[in-house]
Image (cartoon, rainbow, N blue to C red; front, side):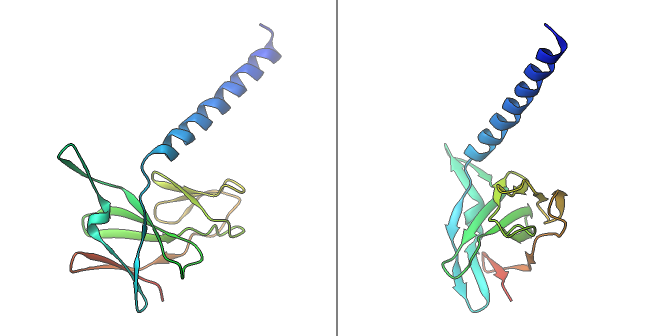
Length: 146
Protein backbone atom coordinates (compact mmCIF):
# COMPACT_ATOMS: atom_id res chain seq x y z
CA UNK A 1 0.00 0.00 0.00
CA UNK A 2 1.38 3.43 -0.85
CA UNK A 3 1.87 6.13 1.76
CA UNK A 4 -1.01 8.35 0.63
CA UNK A 5 -3.55 5.51 0.73
CA UNK A 6 -2.25 4.35 4.13
CA UNK A 7 -2.63 7.83 5.68
CA UNK A 8 -6.10 8.20 4.18
CA UNK A 9 -7.22 4.78 5.48
CA UNK A 10 -5.86 5.50 8.97
CA UNK A 11 -7.49 8.94 8.99
CA UNK A 12 -10.92 7.56 8.07
CA UNK A 13 -10.50 4.79 10.61
CA UNK A 14 -9.82 7.33 13.36
CA UNK A 15 -12.84 9.41 12.33
CA UNK A 16 -15.02 6.29 12.38
CA UNK A 17 -13.74 5.27 15.81
CA UNK A 18 -14.34 8.70 17.29
CA UNK A 19 -17.83 8.91 15.78
CA UNK A 20 -18.86 5.48 17.04
CA UNK A 21 -17.59 6.26 20.55
CA UNK A 22 -19.66 9.46 20.60
CA UNK A 23 -22.71 7.57 19.36
CA UNK A 24 -22.31 4.94 22.04
CA UNK A 25 -21.96 7.58 24.74
CA UNK A 26 -25.08 9.35 23.49
CA UNK A 27 -27.01 6.09 23.68
CA UNK A 28 -26.38 5.80 27.40
CA UNK A 29 -29.42 6.64 29.43
CA UNK A 30 -29.45 10.38 29.87
CA UNK A 31 -32.20 11.22 32.31
CA UNK A 32 -34.23 14.27 31.28
CA UNK A 33 -36.73 15.53 33.80
CA UNK A 34 -39.07 18.41 34.42
CA UNK A 35 -38.14 20.24 37.58
CA UNK A 36 -40.51 22.17 39.81
CA UNK A 37 -40.07 25.93 40.00
CA UNK A 38 -40.49 27.27 43.54
CA UNK A 39 -39.69 30.98 43.77
CA UNK A 40 -36.16 31.40 42.46
CA UNK A 41 -35.33 27.70 42.92
CA UNK A 42 -35.66 24.73 40.61
CA UNK A 43 -36.32 21.66 42.72
CA UNK A 44 -35.77 18.02 41.91
CA UNK A 45 -35.79 14.94 44.11
CA UNK A 46 -32.41 13.38 44.88
CA UNK A 47 -34.00 10.09 43.79
CA UNK A 48 -33.77 11.39 40.19
CA UNK A 49 -30.14 10.21 40.26
CA UNK A 50 -31.06 6.65 41.22
CA UNK A 51 -31.17 3.76 38.75
CA UNK A 52 -32.67 0.44 39.80
CA UNK A 53 -32.06 -2.58 37.56
CA UNK A 54 -32.78 -6.12 38.68
CA UNK A 55 -33.04 -5.05 42.33
CA UNK A 56 -29.61 -3.43 42.11
CA UNK A 57 -29.39 0.30 42.83
CA UNK A 58 -26.78 2.57 41.29
CA UNK A 59 -26.47 6.31 40.82
CA UNK A 60 -26.35 8.39 37.65
CA UNK A 61 -23.46 10.79 37.22
CA UNK A 62 -25.79 13.50 35.91
CA UNK A 63 -29.33 14.43 34.94
CA UNK A 64 -30.60 17.11 32.56
CA UNK A 65 -33.25 19.36 34.09
CA UNK A 66 -35.81 21.24 32.05
CA UNK A 67 -38.60 23.69 32.79
CA UNK A 68 -40.86 25.57 30.40
CA UNK A 69 -39.63 28.93 31.75
CA UNK A 70 -35.98 28.12 31.03
CA UNK A 71 -34.58 28.93 27.61
CA UNK A 72 -31.92 26.21 28.00
CA UNK A 73 -31.81 23.08 30.17
CA UNK A 74 -29.48 22.69 33.15
CA UNK A 75 -27.14 19.72 33.49
CA UNK A 76 -26.69 18.66 37.10
CA UNK A 77 -23.63 16.53 37.91
CA UNK A 78 -23.49 14.46 41.08
CA UNK A 79 -19.88 14.88 42.24
CA UNK A 80 -20.39 13.36 45.71
CA UNK A 81 -23.26 12.48 48.03
CA UNK A 82 -23.67 16.10 49.07
CA UNK A 83 -21.92 17.91 46.20
CA UNK A 84 -23.73 18.77 42.96
CA UNK A 85 -22.73 21.04 40.09
CA UNK A 86 -25.46 22.74 38.03
CA UNK A 87 -24.44 24.07 34.59
CA UNK A 88 -26.49 26.03 32.10
CA UNK A 89 -26.37 24.12 28.81
CA UNK A 90 -25.79 27.24 26.69
CA UNK A 91 -22.48 27.37 24.84
CA UNK A 92 -20.50 30.46 25.84
CA UNK A 93 -19.23 30.77 22.25
CA UNK A 94 -22.42 31.44 20.27
CA UNK A 95 -25.29 30.26 22.45
CA UNK A 96 -26.02 26.83 20.98
CA UNK A 97 -27.64 24.29 23.31
CA UNK A 98 -25.04 21.83 24.55
CA UNK A 99 -25.28 18.04 24.65
CA UNK A 100 -24.22 15.94 27.63
CA UNK A 101 -21.72 13.11 27.06
CA UNK A 102 -20.67 11.53 30.33
CA UNK A 103 -18.36 13.87 32.20
CA UNK A 104 -18.42 16.61 29.56
CA UNK A 105 -20.76 18.89 27.66
CA UNK A 106 -20.24 19.44 23.96
CA UNK A 107 -21.47 22.04 21.49
CA UNK A 108 -22.85 20.46 18.29
CA UNK A 109 -22.29 23.67 16.30
CA UNK A 110 -18.54 24.27 16.60
CA UNK A 111 -17.25 21.48 18.84
CA UNK A 112 -16.49 23.39 22.03
CA UNK A 113 -16.24 21.06 25.03
CA UNK A 114 -16.71 21.83 28.71
CA UNK A 115 -15.82 19.84 31.83
CA UNK A 116 -18.36 18.88 34.48
CA UNK A 117 -17.40 21.99 36.41
CA UNK A 118 -18.04 24.26 33.41
CA UNK A 119 -14.46 24.98 32.37
CA UNK A 120 -13.55 25.11 28.67
CA UNK A 121 -11.77 21.91 27.63
CA UNK A 122 -11.65 22.62 23.87
CA UNK A 123 -12.50 25.82 21.96
CA UNK A 124 -13.52 27.88 20.11
CA UNK A 125 -15.36 28.89 23.32
CA UNK A 126 -13.08 30.82 25.66
CA UNK A 127 -15.46 31.51 28.57
CA UNK A 128 -16.67 28.94 31.15
CA UNK A 129 -20.33 27.96 31.43
CA UNK A 130 -22.72 29.68 33.80
CA UNK A 131 -23.07 27.73 37.03
CA UNK A 132 -25.86 27.81 39.59
CA UNK A 133 -25.50 27.33 43.35
CA UNK A 134 -27.15 24.19 44.73
CA UNK A 135 -28.31 23.09 48.16
CA UNK A 136 -29.92 19.97 49.59
CA UNK A 137 -33.04 20.31 51.68
CA UNK A 138 -35.52 17.56 52.68
CA UNK A 139 -34.36 15.07 50.01
CA UNK A 140 -34.62 17.77 47.35
CA UNK A 141 -31.85 19.31 45.32
CA UNK A 142 -32.53 23.02 45.00
CA UNK A 143 -30.90 24.96 42.17
CA UNK A 144 -30.78 28.70 42.84
CA UNK A 145 -31.54 30.50 39.57
CA UNK A 146 -31.05 34.11 40.70
